[in-house]
Length: 268
Image (cartoon, rainbow, N blue to C red; front, top):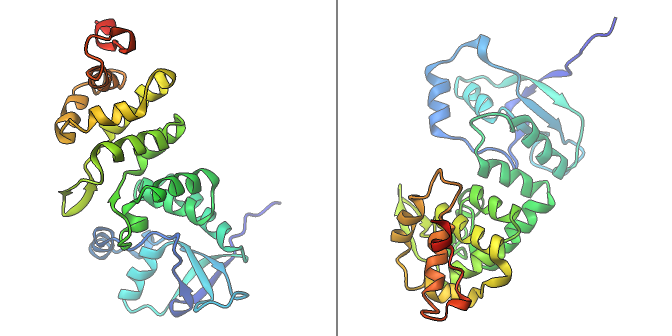
């Protein structure tokens, strides 16, 4: 008979450590655990044995940071945990992401941070591209003074899949610089997902016909917040906000119709 066995062990909380790829504590989750504590609902946290490394702790937390902290707040000194054998740092980051990938509480930026720590190639390329332009991600770079503005993981990854990431970001930076405005007490880049994806789709579909310098010059004449509203009107219509951007681009040529994209007239 084949038996499934989980390798568990009682570990002192003081011997556990939190690494950069992990999910930081969130007040909302901690309050929920405090208000709804039930011993029967506490799943085993998952730790990796890192005693062979010269760290300040013996076991790395790859799942259960909130649960462990919650139990510590209840004055528990040790917790029964699932123990995985030693893995190098990048693999620990990957295991964290795999354990949390299907959970609602793990945000796209949490996953992106884990992919960075595991040195996943596409995440590294995205991060390097943004950093070169002085752009960062809130949870990854929130404390770095060198970051000029923050971008959103979801639409950045969409632009990366379309192979237009650097072109869109460089165009937007040329047009509007690093304008920021306050949203929920956090600084966000004034360029939104609707604007970025609209510009990205235009470049993706008409890359050979567009002069990016001219596009940036024309966009600089637009108020980015107003442009967002205009692109937003195309939501649910196949991301056709790129037609709005095409109209702005065409303004550069006036009567020289041969250089216009003329998407607006062709779309009617």
